[in-house]
Amino acid sequence: MKIVEKRAGAESINAIRDIVGAECVRDSKADLYVYGFDAGMHRNIPDAVVRPQTPEQISQIVKLANERDFAIVPRGAGTALCGHSIPIAGGIVLDMQGMNRIKEINAGDLLCVVEPGVVCDNLNDALKNYRFFIPGPASSEAATIGGMVSTNASGDRALKYGATRDYVLGMQVVMPTGEVVRFGTRTLMNASGYQMEKLFVGMEGTLGIITEITLKMAPLPEKTAACIAAFRELVEAGQTVADIIAVPIFPAQLEIMSDICVKAVNKATGLGLPECGGFLLIACDGHPEAVKDEIKKVREICEKNGAFFMDYTEDPERIEDLWKGRKQLLASLSILKPEFATIMLADDMAVPISKVPQAVKGFLEIQDKYDIYIPPYGHAGDGNLHTKVLLNPENPDHWRQAEKAVKEIYDLVLALGGTVTGEHGIAISKAEYFHKERADAIPFMRAIKRALDPKNILNPYKIFDWEKTFLHNLRYPVELGGKGELNK
Image (cartoon, rainbow, N blue to C red):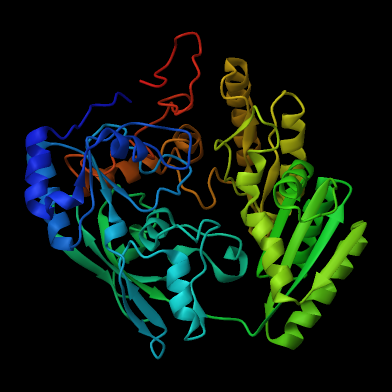
């Protein structure tokens, strides 16, 4: 699809200053550079960065964008990995971090009301006093609730506690034409017509700008215990995951790591995990007796499937250390080899849980065909797997190999009945493969987008409107024979 730029000129930026105040608009080269990329591999520079304070200001900006035809790209903390907040057509980045109030915590109604810029961990710190929490992604120390809603974020607790969509009761949204609308309810049960608030979860900033969210809260568990298990082969660890779920046991967390991942974490953190072909981190929580029984069964299954090392702990500090190592895995991979970088490509697929053993085995077979690393890991308990690509970003041949390998990975995932994204969303990086997976649904998604956003103002050219994405607007200094649109 040909991209038509939707730039915000100087007059439009000055008009926005009049709406929000000069202190809430940034357009220095340094600011524009920083807001030109997220945690992924793509980059494009915006015309200005705007940090609004109220829904009314956003409404005025959206109406101005419709009049003058410039793009608006909502952004939380920029922790997304697929290019969600990249202003691919230019325009303004709308930084929602200025709207960061926790407006209400209501234990009696099991809900809280927050603005979109509230950081997940900050909300959980506040909810802890009431013995509640909201499950969040691995980037919870930075990720904002608005970003989580926009991408339907989840994390290592999704198997037992669900994803963000499962907690959204209602929201306030500035629509693409400027109307300020409320969707949903403050009740746990709701059968009143189309549940529009659910449609806006996972819409990646393309259908509206979320300005307030009402969330259901989950009770904090009484007790947590953890078990770690090392296997000689990754496929043994994968089979153990499938066997645990089939009991059925739903651990609070069930993470898998390949040999490269374990080496990277040990090198970066000094945790001293046993080096092995496949590694599992398993946590069970709830009533103390139930936790004791579940962990016992988990250990039996690990032993049956060939675990050569196991450890068990109820010590909260030890559990925190283990999961800190897992949360630091992405950063750890980057120091495995000095000349390599960790690139977010095939990083977030999901397969049926019973297919986890086949998936991880296939990923390793694909890796063995190339001289780049594609280490599997992830939230295996719900079938959500990750494979970061480790390559030399200045080596054009590595990029070519990565493109071939990523296609093979997604082909395998779809052949196993899986999906190209379990928790990170589509945006730019996965659009090409999303078209292959959801060919029947894409015309209907486009119809919804066109109906709500007829001028294509909000986060244009994402999800279904952008197909050939692999080497577009890379933030890395590589030239592939002068082809493509690199680093423009």
